[in-house]
Amino acid sequence: MVLGYGDLKRGVTIELDGEPFQVEEYSHSKMQQRAPVIKLKLRNIRTGQRVDKSYQGYDVKFNMAAVKSRKTQYIYQDQDEYCFMDLETFEQYIISKEQLKDSVNFLREEAEVEVVFYDDSPITIQLSAHVNLQVTESPPGVKGDSTSGATKPAVLETGLTVQVPLFINPGEMVKIDTRSGEYLERA
Image (cartoon, rainbow, N blue to C red; front, side, top):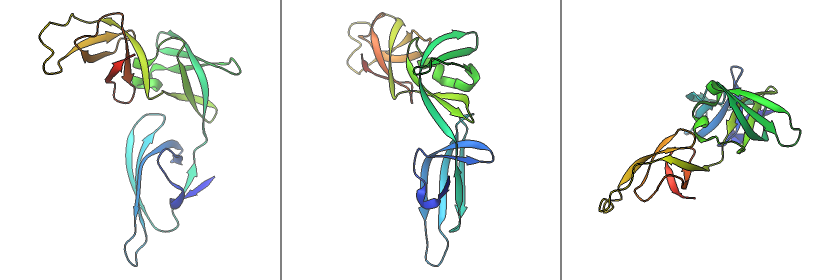
């Protein structure tokens, strides 16, 4: 499917130079008696690399990338490979740690995630906006340190270290933002 500059919006996936890109930001401007200028902030879905592009003219066209996603469940990790099972067909997909990048910090067994496919091969996963993870290690909070909203480091079940309030103890569940990796609240 071919998209014109009027069809672009945030979240659309387009194909540039044989690679799938997702539009993160989009703006266009038109001055009198001139062709419109389109500015795009794109993220390569395979590599995660961010790119800024600008185009000028009325005849700017983009090909929509053939990206699909399927609901899966994370099953297990084998060295640097992660296995996901399709919830409808029970087919299993292996994705490398290199492809997942920082997403591995938010994966716990049996978590449901969307696996993203490009040309019928899995390339990455799409996490929900937040996940609930258990605190495994955290130093005890010192009484009297709470006047300024103090925080302390906590190690979560996936190995991720985040700053949490002093009242959080090991064994508690916390809600973590997957986009920023920050503590949100108790779960």
